[in-house]
Length: 323
Image (cartoon, rainbow, N blue to C red; front, side, top):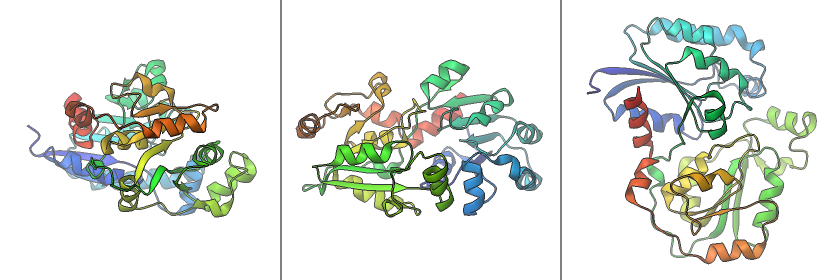
């Protein structure tokens, strides 16, 4: 039913998730054209976008999208935009001339990317991973996905780490991770998209004032390295952003890998895969004994239907079927 259909996808390059989405759509019979949602991979430009200075880049953004628009020689069945930071309502209206269906998905909250709100009336379907945003703006709630490389299943016979954390440095994450990991065998990796963003958040907004430069990497881990850490971990630690209610990609990947999860996101208790043997929800008062006791519990396997539901293949299939 999807034969000969064409999809145009704009998605930020982030831990290869854009490639995973492209492959999954192609598996549904679509010819997929993939572009970065941002006009450049230049560190300085990416930093300006991340910090919300899009007006400075207005001409560059418009030129980038117009160039792609002019290359479209045939109608597009689905224009799919993932986590928009740059695209504007005016640009979407231009693409409407060649795209019969426009779908937007947010894997960030509107509190972090308020400009994306302007795209709701320009879209045929609008999804968010954030339950609060879904209710407040009357848009569809759709949790994130895990890619097939996280179908790990078996725990290493001698796992190297009790707990592992891999994530972007923001808010109070650094302090929380250090506190939770103290006394356990842990792998910790903090990532920052650029040196400029790090300096801005450390010295201007003071958001990460206690974070040392030596504790942060400006190069992300490869997918292979991330999977290797997960294979060798009993449990994954997730510290959610204070402005987000949606479940992180890391939470869903942990589900796919059949690993235990420690998270600060209380909303996870309302999801169908929640099981207290597998997931420990914590706050500032968590004790070492609580974590230790949780780690000693055996992982409780869920149904195949639940695991499949959150895979990237189902995520995309559901996405395309709805539209």
